Amino acid sequence: MDVEIVLSIVIAVCTFIYTGISLLLWVESKASRLQKLTPHVILYLKGTEDHKTLVLHVKNIGEGVAYNVQIKTLENFNQFGLENAPISQLGILKEGFSAMPPGYELKFYIGDLIELYEKSRDRKIKFEVMCKRKDKKNISEVFTLPLIQAMGQNYSTPPETYLGQIPYYLKEINSSLKTIFGNKS
Image (cartoon, rainbow, N blue to C red; front, side, top):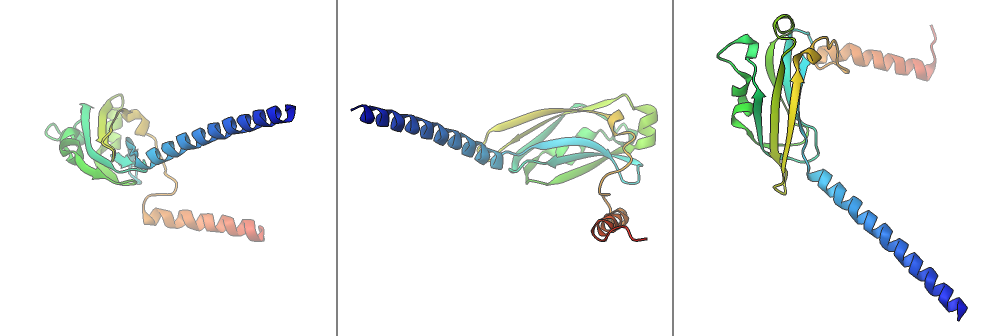
């Protein structure tokens, strides 16, 4: 009888552990499926490769499609300093966007970097991004973009243009070849 009790306890403990592991796997699986549905639309400022113009980037870095994307400008800014060209009136910022697939990116030119540095370096542009994922759940996030953060960005890796990428990748290939074959001068 003692062996039967011990065996029953071992089976009960194993069943309890198996049930716990199954529950954890179910929670993880649900989180993975949710990640595949969830968009993540971000806004950021970046200078062009020639370091002359400031650009507002709107990009979906999530794995899901962003539906009914609306971007509300909370602190507005005039494009290239023109009074009749507030950025709130640009494309998606004014009209919204019906669907933004993963990796999709829009760019809006804001102004001359030197002029902005001299006149508006302490300004901020503030946006609220609202969208829905496939299961109709609302997603909302506020972005405060200080112009000073975009000043002094001197490079991007790899460069954005093909002409900038050619020397970059040639240098990468050269260093890889040196690693493989040794540095024979």
